[in-house]
Length: 187
Image (cartoon, rainbow, N blue to C red; front, side, top):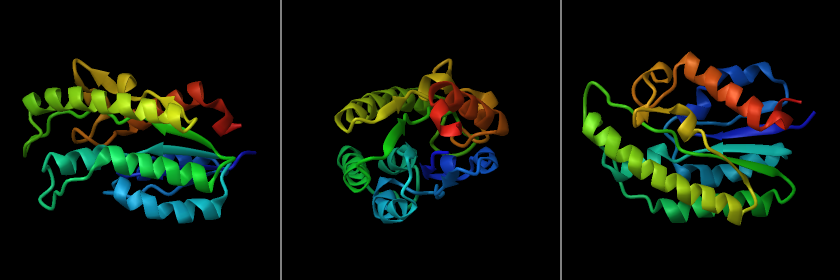
């Protein structure tokens, strides 16, 4: 059985359905950005996984939009590239799956209104093209979850708790997507 590590932010951390699989370790941490995942490569290396599934970027994006009060600018293209480089250099025989950023949907409060959600999702789709390109550069497999979760230009409301995080139905859809596109994870 292959050892699999999922790493990322709260979307990964809250993926509780993964706990039913003995071969999967989830080291996702809520609030994390690429800048915080880079040092986690040391922990990742200790696991010596056969497969890594990486989903990161929405918190970087929201920081750059000043969505958070403590927002600061993150040079995402550089930090994401560094993260992929660190993973592939330190785990050269590990298969890497890179998951696209998910779309967002409006929230009741704050700056994530319908106008911004539509605009931001166009930007996220553009960033996903970068992520897809980098997956080729680092010989990773790109998984397009964005198009699985978008409906009418926004994160499908059936899959979202708050415009960013996923519902149980969202995680079931994510799990089904993984089983369809990465069956080696669950063997």
